[in-house]
Amino acid sequence: TSSAKLRIFKIGEVLHKFLQDALSHETDQFIVTAIEQSVTYKHNGIELRGRADAIIQLIDGEECVVELKTCNRRAFDYPLPKPEHLAQTMFYLARLHLKTAYIIYVDKDRLETHVCPAITYDPAIFKEMIDRAKQLHKSLPPRCPDYPPKKEPEHWNGKICVYCDFHEKECEET
Image (cartoon, rainbow, N blue to C red; front, side, top):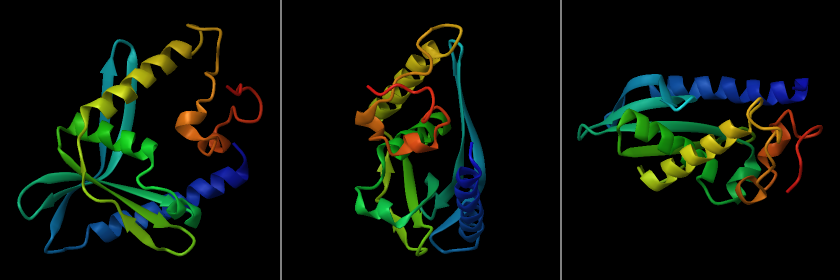
């Protein structure tokens, strides 16, 4: 991974921590019950791990996932939430047995925010993500000589590929 990529991720990490700290301050709308809640999925040799940025409890008692996403200003030109962020959030909702989540996007350039409307758990999106994980798992060596897996432009539009270490060397275009 190049030093430029590492700097991009470090800026996001610092801003992320700042936002988590800001969420933790008292409010009359919710209380924070967890920060960076670990989430895992293990089944048939597949293991997925993640960390929900925050779990909040609303004044009505409902617990919700809060996912913070830092991005550049161009992200606000496209529909939000991004499909990959929606899938990630479904993973957290499924594994934490919660029904509702909020994704908050923060523009690193202008520090503007966009809070997506409440997101309700959708088992079909979670299943699609697990099916994709199974497909990727089968593609990893030594199980399959077709490594790394081919790009899927219909999912990523090549935007996320620039962060992948296979992008310039080994990844095949579909």
